[in-house]
Length: 155
Ligand SMILES: [Zn+2]
View 1 (cartoon, rainbow, N blue to C red):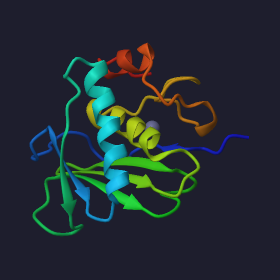
View 2: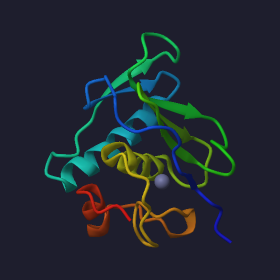
View 3: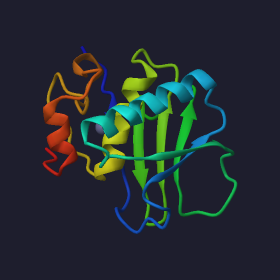
View 4: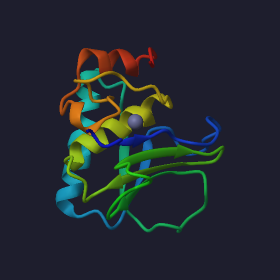
């Protein structure tokens, strides 16, 4: 049976004060992991003709700086209750958690979570898509259904 992969984010939407296109990335991600993260973002950008754009600010030390940021956090193990990725929002910030030890490759996990980042939507698509909720059925490349999801048809 497929392990439940993605936990729905909790908290309130909206009110982010960080520039929408900037995300601070945990300094603990390795160079190889940074490359995979960038490739996931590049895939969204390519599929959306540049609309789905994010600029990563590498080397962020967790807990430093003021609130009101979008932050990607490296987790060496289960993110939460069997999940390998998770994105939470508060009125002030966004935290995206990525399990670097999951069976699913890092780029695919980031690809999925970036879908939530771009849309602020928790809908999950069915099997064979990037936004599928289960590891056993997730696509490693963006499908048309994922692009439709990006443009607001969250399901
Ligand atoms: Zn999800």
